[in-house]
Amino acid sequence: MEKISQKDIEWLLSPKEEFRVEDTVREEKVKELSFRRRIVKALLSVLLIAGLGILPFFILIRTAVFLNVTKGINGWAALLAGIGATVILLVIYVVALFRRIKNKKLLFQFGLGGVSTLVGGFCIYGLLYLSSVNAKTDSVREVYRSLHPILRVAVATTTLAENDLVITDIKRAPEDYIDMGLTPLQSSMHYPQDDGFVHAIDLRTVGHSEFRNNMLKWSLDAMGLNTLRHVGTADHLHVSLPKGE
Image (cartoon, rainbow, N blue to C red; front, side):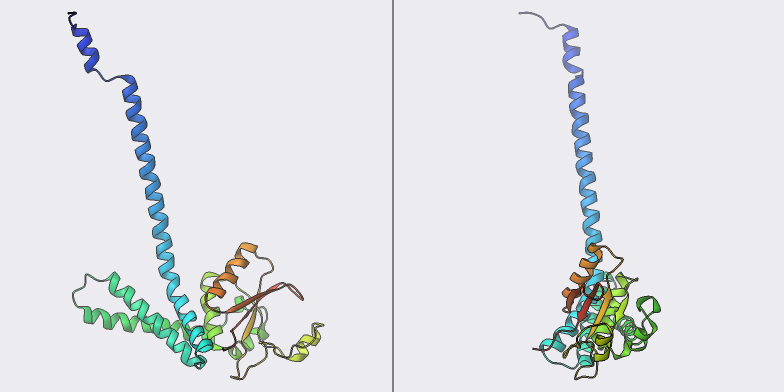
């Protein structure tokens, strides 16, 4: 039997170059996979945070529109119900975020008071004020309070994400259509409706990308509002409160 030399033993025990290459490749693949997982986890976290941030505003408008349109509840009462639903959701956020605090009763009281003030203040702001940045003309700002309260809060909500949103028109009379060279509409939502409020606005789409315009339309549709892209007298997005069933 042929004897195994010391040289052969050393060769067997020494790490081979190809093995080292394989180990390096394997380590690089593991690192790459780990990096991809971190990226995916970070993206999911961002989407989750964004979703949790958007959800309260969606609940606010969607609840108000549903109760007003489907259940026939007065616009102000429906808006208050939407505020209530939003406050409940945000209180749940607060309790979940500070769940380690032992005094749950005190946490709930402070959370409820703070959240109610925040949501109520935001809605009052949206009901009473329209920035000149978001109005095409001073006349649009002057008739802003003639707009249905749910639409006013919807506008305020939308401007949080779209700060250069511009309302081009709110209240109209039959004469306005004649001035534009159009036949006056008999049932325009830009006229004051039975509740005394205007139920429609026009939003500027000119100068914006189609992606932005489509996202704006989709967002307002998701809130339960009616949207229609008009390209007649001027390209704009017509947004209105749906008629009751």
